[in-house]
Length: 230
Image 1: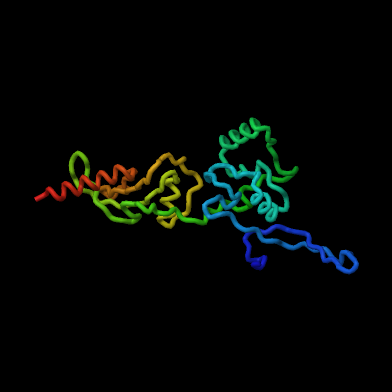
Image 2: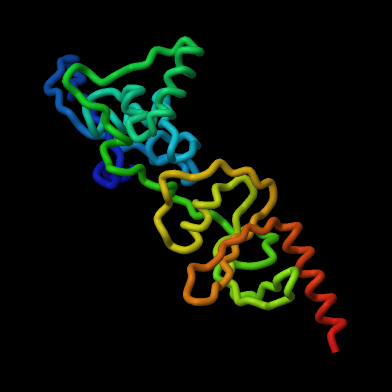
């Protein structure tokens, strides 16, 4: 078993030393037991898959024990939603009431604690993978042809986003950036390519989002034009 200090999350446990011959308790002491961290693709605070701007699951045993190990009290729904916008908190309260679940607050005099006490929730430990059937790779330089003027412009693949994965997560993961707290709900049902097109006069690059099917057709059409060119 790994040494207790090797675990990031621990919980206090009362350990008794018993005389096996007499059955008497010789001593009682508090020790810290390690808690196995959540899966890489789950929230690292509550071990449940959810968007960063949404609340943690107060029913999660991992969240309860990890929170207790840090704060020496059990988490409440107010703690689980402490990092959320007011509209999200109101929606959570309505959902709990609809399901006959009581909203809970910290003990008198205590303030809600976001996450496990950190300023921000730690990001998932895994990276957004590039789909195996990707036609292009993140960081790849390409040329984009304007559909009306046929003018060619330099561009770069910023990210290759798997289906139903938050675009902001893929951009951050595949470019070595920290993940943002607020993301848009993913709606794309196929691989999505985020491409940045260079702009003249030093302006910020223009960003376009191209689904896999459209990119595949565009690459095929480009190859046909290249073959027909003198």
